[in-house]
Amino acid sequence: MSSPSVRIVFLGGLGEIGRNCFCIEVGDRILVVDCGLMFPDADMPGVDLVLPDFTYLRQHARQVDGVVVTHGHEDHVGGLAYLLRDLEVPIYGSALALGMARNRIEEAGLLDRTELVPVADGECRRIGPIDVEFIPVTHSVPHAFANAYFTPAGTILHSGDFKLDLTPVDGRTTDLARIGELARQGVKLFLSDSTNSERAGFTASETTVGAIMRGLFREYSDRRLIIACFASHLHRVQQVAEAALAAGRRVAFLGRSMSQNVALAREMGLLTLASDRIIDIEETPRFAPEEVCIICTGSQGEPMSALALMAAHEHKHVKVSEDDVVVISAHAIPGNEASVSRVIDSLHRAGADVLHEGTTPVHVSGHASREELKFLLDLVRPEWFVPVHGEYRHLVHHARLAEMVGVPRDRILLCEDGDVVTLDVAGAEVERRAVPAGYQYVDGATDDIGPGVLRDRRNLAVEGFVCVIVTVDAVSGELITSPQIVTRGWVYEDEAAELIEEAKAVVAASLAEAAAEGALDFDTLRRHARRSLGRFINDRTRRRPAVIPVVVEV
Image 1: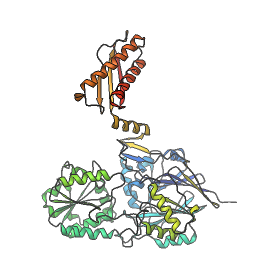
Image 2 (image 1 turned 45 degrees about the horizontal axis):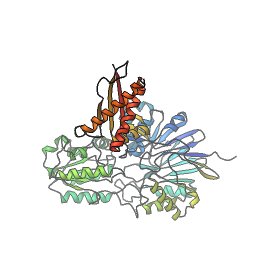
Image 3 (image 1 turned 135 degrees about the vertical axis):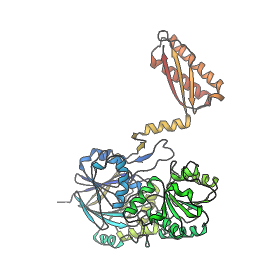
């Protein structure tokens, strides 16, 4: 009797940076791997966050045995609080990753819908019908995991986000020996991080940034240093803080997520800093610039982040001046480049010097480059390979690397969100767009913003809107007063008075024609007003703003 098939359902993270989420199904049981978010692009006005489409998981909620998280970055755990609205399941991961996820879950009031189950390096857990092994890997956040899933169709190995850092800050290296042992036993399917598949060579060790930071504190010994980085990048925070303390400075942490993560890491013993050298941000004005280092959030130019508020001169405790050197110790996520550039410009206008990866080697990636990806592929030698975690071009380049090291082309599957891979003893096959996997938008407290709403917002941003208000006699349908026109984004009313008067006359003539024909109902009058005004605007200005007619009967 043949062993049952295993399905891998991709819900996010393939063809984009963020929203990482996929499922492994054995029989009628489901294990979810990661549940991340993505930050909105410029063409998503008003959207705060973008999530995976949870439709498939909602439909099979009773079949889900748990969620495994590979590490604590928001693009892997940021969607958990939203998923828990629909599912009541345990979450497995490192204590640090669970601690980072817990903040959002607790804020959403959903802690009672889950059990946070911490796991250690090398530990195995039985989750439903699947045995899961948690294998340590190095990344830009401590305690990241690769995972081996032992299924009836064979071993599925997922690299998680990783790089091969041989001298990590905490001494915790990628367990290549265990991965090699799994390879000798046979890996049916390998899923591997593709983020840096276009970058040649090897990714530098995180410790190289520590040496650069120590040099900056020596070079700018008479000025205040403000270092912006990801709040989750605790190894970076540790190295900056140690360099500041060695230079005799006090350290202040700024930004809600930064303060939360530092407190969590200190509580867990992952970050060791002398308490008497840490000050509150409110205390920084009492010290000379050369006595202070501020470590803050905002490396992506987020509008309300600590660094953006400083750049806009709106932060109540930190005023940026020529006494400051600002270091942006992060790489701009695709789509954030313009925001980061604006913040850098504003900081320069305030008189500060700004250092970033374009000018100084103040950042290294947490993802493996081409030679590391090839090394791991050659070590694993999988039967089948699916590149994951990256934009589509990253997946393509990773697939080419796999072919270079000997994975047969017909055993490399280029998948996208919504695809389903089915594994069995005979091999693997892909069903394209088999499950819903579109974007789920979050706007404020609402997470049901659809594509239609976004399309309307884009149109309003480009064309504006025109509202025409008419008051008519309820019996005769005749206009009682001249139409009133209010517009935003079409023309500026004070400078286009003549054009607007013409528009009023066009609407009045159209409604008079409707009344003469005996059309007195609201819908017909609104339709006449919209059609006549829209035609006039298009003829005169070649624009198509949203036209909103309001008919008032008296």
